[in-house]
Length: 355
View 1 (cartoon, one colour):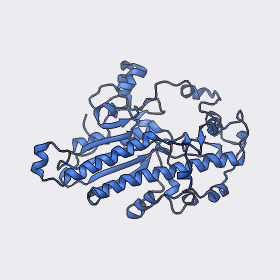
View 2 (tube, one colour):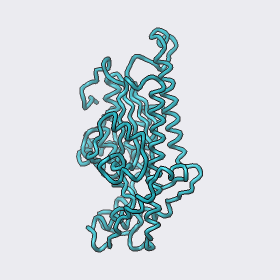
View 3 (cartoon, one colour):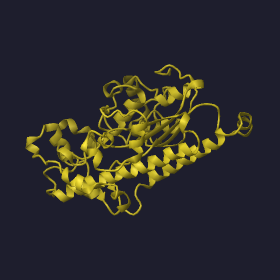
View 4 (spheres, helix red, strand yellow):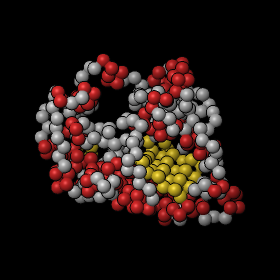
């Protein structure tokens, strides 16, 4: 299908390093927010100082797939009808049904649903059509056959296994946990945390290093040896899953957390009866309702401290990717963008997971 944006003037376009995380509390890089004091984030702070920091930007949805499909298409959630994590973009730009959608719902449903979405082209496609070399590593989670249409190593389909009983019964107000108690997902002594994100980080660094070497070769040599260093601008998507739950960390990252500041920020724990029905429903669904054991102040603190330690790990991994871009001699000609698909409640307002 046609691009939603005019074609990029590739000859004068910058390279783009697109850094992404999942469930990042944006207040950690808002110097006006007390949350910024909870954890050290030197990489994100440096990017904010060196560029523009949109601290009042809101995600289109507090869920991964709806937010990411909105980001990739430039459409609101209601326009693309991607309301939950079991339904991304059902068609690709050619009109073919997404493979994961077909496995979960059947090709006929995907074709019909795709017509109602009326959006199948992503900004990945717009960039590729405009002459960019597009390289994807890590979590995409949006559908549209992106995993099979792009490389080298994108992950997450955007359909999460298809229909989910806890999701499709929400309208019936059936109140029961659909996620585990967060304490079951929390560990501050994990030996090897988030190996999938370290693999993504390594792949992004290796890609940039190879691109830097190739960019220093004469144009004729690149053409002759098939090098990845073409004269086209490139777009590198480097997307981590952390600090998305489960909450896992260790002393390496805990040392970046200001524990007294996190303790002092102990959030109130409202009674479910005093909450809006939608909020009390989500508290129950996310494993912090009245059917769970009473959470002590220390248990709430432990979840929050572990989350902010994961933020520190995220900052470190992304920092190494930015350093690799600089070491490759590419930083001066590269636009660096960082964003997250949504935030994290981390036990505030008796909520956990997406914000």
